[in-house]
Image (cartoon, rainbow, N blue to C red):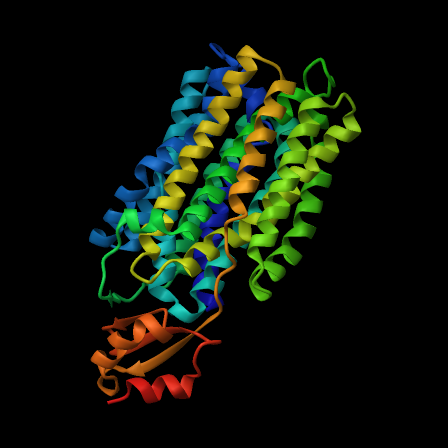
Length: 438
């Protein structure tokens, strides 16, 4: 599995590393450009996410028609061009256009679909967790490298590095990523958006994903602007002193959170702790006059973000049925990208009309409501998968059994297999075989 998932995770990580490198410093860089206002700065910070949300579905559809690899190539080339536009922009509107172009190469859903093509169902949750963890690592590395490189060589250099990373991702695509087989999963129902939104656990995960990403852009509008403002009067070159300890603590927290959430099946508890940390972080960043306490608030934010990130995608695949996985991930990612854009834009607007104290309290109150909502989330039921030759199973018996002892089943036509997902606490493998055999 690792050999199949790692190259795809590497492509996604390289792309996100490029996007994340500029996040710690882009707001103060954009604020200095011709025509800049705090509102436009907020749009620049989250702008890539708006086009990501818009183009997720078109890119997914394109990948079904022309293939995964060609679609990934198109997306990476668009991202590369957008990065170069950003690198050579001299006014806020050109930078904004470049950020929109970066997001237009929306390959996240294509990579998720490709992992589904290459990795069998029973270990797909682990594959999604690896992908989530790789993004979290990219995030943490970027927080340490971005401020240092940006201060030494300029933010335009960060965008050039991003373009180079896109080229490297293209090399990985054509040298390390296997061509996926055409596997058609057939299930006796079709995915409906209404069914996904009616499922309380899936809805909770969509909200968790959206809120986490929205708070991310809010933080990256606020942190560099506040630290370099009159309140603290930091130099741009000093920003690493806030991001570096936060990055290290976030990395340390990510591992135990992933183990506790995945291995011990306690993601709800991880999410609740993370949201609590988000509340505290924004209150501190909004209200403190102490640099030390502000860094504590930044560190709390990074810890919360990194604890969540490896679990979000994996939990969605666990709660969704097989015929819903693609739709659920697509809806979740699209909503999250819209939230990313709104988080940056709203924070920029608030900086125009209020102060950081009001913003910190407003975000904390919103996160408190989110915390109460998340109390309804349930930890996923532990399931096992049974793989049987199609000609050995009585489909009528299988259909009759579904509402009682199994979660779902589907047919893998390419391999001529019946795949049955069942709760391990409800029935044993031998009993299940006996109930459905011809």
